[in-house]
Length: 298
Image (cartoon, rainbow, N blue to C red; front, side, top):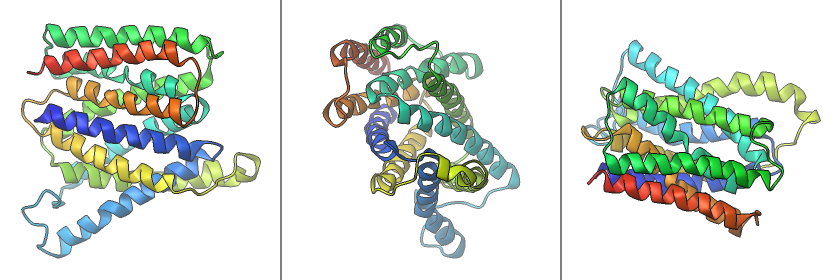
C-alpha cells in the first residue's frame, strides 16, 4: 500500500511543481515562497485549533496531538532544512527550464539512498539497484542535454542552486524517516508548515523588502494558491506512506521523483521548451528506474 501512496504523492507533487513554475515566471521569488508557507499554514492551523479546543477530531487522521518541547524542536529543525531546500529550488526553477530541473531533481533519491544505507541499514534487492543505476545514468545524460541550451552544469549558478536544493532535500528525506518512526503525520506536517511561515517573515523583511524596487516585482496570480494546495496533499500522503513499518525511505523518495512525468509534459506543452527529444531519453531512464523500483517492492 505504501508504494501506491508514494505514486499518488508523486503525481500531486508534479502538479505542485508545474504551478510553481507558472507562479515564478517573471515574478519575485521570496514573496511567493512566503505566501506558499502562509497559505499552507492557514490550511492546517484550523486543525490545531479544533484539536486543542474540541473533541471533534479525536481518533481521526486529522487530529493534532499535544506535544513536548523536544518534539516541537525536532519539527523546527525539519522546517529549517526544508525551507533551505525550497529557497535554493525556487530560484533554480525560476531561471532554468522545467525539462532540466525536473529530471535533475529526480536524481535526489540517489543521495537519500546512500544515507538510508548508512543510517537506517536499508538494503536494496537487484531490481531496486537497477533502478538506482538507471537514475544515475540519467543525470549524466541530462548534463549533455543542458549543454545544447548553453547550460553548463559546472559553471551555471542556477544549476548550483538546484543541486543544493537536491542535497538539502535528500537530508530532509532521511530526517523524515527518523521523525516518522515515532511521530504522527499531523504533528510533523502541521507544525513544520507553521514554523516555515514564521521563518520566512524575517527573510522577507530583511532580504527582499528593502530591495524590492530594484529587483523583479511581485505580481499576484492564482497559481500561488494552487502551489500550497497540491503541496499539502502531496506531503500528507507522503508522510502517511512513511508510517507503514515496512516502508523504505530510499524507495519512497525515488518514486516521488516520478513527478518528472508531469513536469516534463508541462514544459513541452505550456512552456514550449527545447531539445525535447534528447531530454526524453533522460526521462525514459528515470521512468525505467521507477519501474524497477516498483518491481523490487513486490
